[in-house]
Image 1: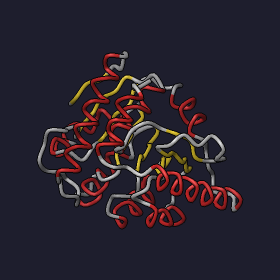
Image 2: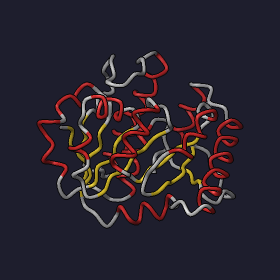
Image 3: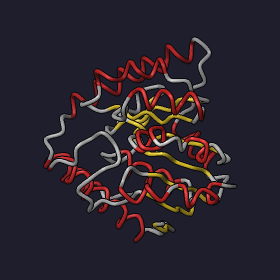
Image 4: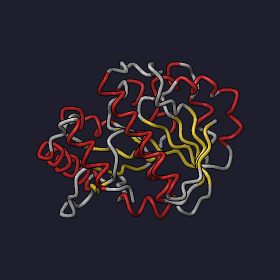
Length: 237
């Protein structure tokens, strides 16, 4: 488990509001309840981790500059899980690379709905991934997009402890990147990563790498280093 002191320090440094995070988690929980009642498949986070633990390898695709080498490495998708990190879909869809990602045996999308929504919707329609949607105080107004996502299953996470919720569970981390790494670690997967460039000043998504984003990327690096010390088997491509 990542040290709670690291998480707490980062929350304070960015003035992350607990009440807003909790409100967002409640809202996502209600949305997932409604979708479940309408026969949309909703899987709980712990159940999904158990499913992932049946596999041995995964490839995590992040929106850093090294993701440009995706085409030359497409054969590594075979026989493994692919975890796509939120805004990486901007680059994948815009460059007609979805066909490579579809060759994986299981596709996971980790998103806080911060990617270009048109790219995200198109990606989900083409790939039909298991979509792990994360609720936090800054994406409250985007949570309704979940209702329009076509995917094989939905899973809800949040960044506050809220055991009273039915469909949304706590997952450590403040970026889709470090959450993806943490998910792979929880499932005991050997990890290959492409597009993991936390020191880069540019991104292959529409988002600007400003000072807040740089701080989050530093946190992602801290999580990565912490998990490697705890036994995460990982390789950057």
